[in-house]
Image (cartoon, rainbow over all chains, first blue to last red; front, side):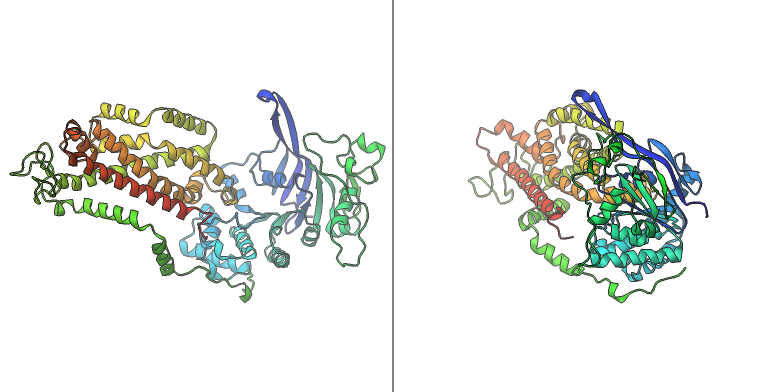
Length: 321
Length: 302
């Protein structure tokens, strides 16, 4: 197996929250609490979980928007924590992001040409004509036409805007794109187009994706591997097919149960979870999922399960196995 | 590199009306009265040398002091709005005074706007102790009564029109700093700014390409509302004798010179310059108000 594009080891991000008079009491929010994963060239890793489980914090850590409390992130074998100068710029150039809302991620005052050209202007000293040429190329890559370059974002539909955002992410020789719920804000009919486009781009360009989402069907469709996050930890990870065929962790099962059946007549599995996600300020003892788990046992509230090997080159953290 | 054939269904059309249509629409909604007043005053100020009947600083030959407007007894059409205590023509002085008011108002606002916008962006975008220092400075500045502070500075640097511009600029920048800082704080969290940072854009580039263009609307509206304030301040300073030095014709100075005769019936010495100040300030405020509504992103159809 080739060496991974991105390797995350023991990643933690704890936020301090001050409470009480003069902030004397402090509490910790463990947004990301020991996460490991790797993304290989040309591969898509799906990161799935409820709101507040730490998916977005993980992406911020990868994008150097936050500094980790502990753990390491290595890009092509180099730890990104100490990057500076030319090396940092090389990383900025190779890793891009597409955000959820294409209405706020494109500057309303810039033309599509300038939005897409921005990374090129930062990282290359190409002449205007060469930049225009590259902008035209990536516009065609994402299924738009060259002549939309002089338009403003408000002249596009949501799906088209997201295509512009993807084109921008591809403008430099990008090797990893963090897709932070890229289709959640789009109409269902447009979602499939964007997902297919992303898959096509991956096949032609060999770019890797970290696909963050909460919609199981979408994530399962595009990802080669899936990691399920719950309250800052990965509770189960496996090859996409294996995970969908046989989810093992009760939380993963619950996610599948909550998804709509693919045929209206199909019976959904029972065992849906109850209640809200607990406050990350006061994590449950033992297994973090036990208060909501339909198959909780006495041991679950006492000992935290460690990740065990499971079929499909995967791992699962549950006392059941 | 492989390309995907463009799908014609994805072709994008312009949904906005043409440039001419936008212009016509804007003209129809424009506030007529303030624009006419401001336009007229600008024209008068520009063409003062051509349209003013006399020299504003020397007495009119053959005219007595305190000659009333032409429609009153003892008035003359030669000096339609009367003469002052040095038998200078009031109309001429009003025409040249428009120059002073407009130059001080616009340049003072420009100075205030530049200082305030620069500090506001610095404060909001850099944050941390830079933000703390700038904001505490702003608080301290706001705690000082503006006019008293301006008088103090004017007394220190000496009265001249250009000094007044710099002084008023450095008194009235606080509002910009505060408002622009707030705007920048919210812009900084917007995704397109984050995207630029993730793409490796330097702070300077983010400010130039993303922050500045997005605060210009706010800065413009603030400017249009500041012009009137600065004009009043200039008139006040001139009235108090620390503004534009005599014999230069400034409306505030004319009021000041008419003070000894305020109770003796020569009303034309005060009413005309006073009305001019009122008119210009009212016009700029109305225009600013219209601009505020017009540039409000909520009400503008982007």
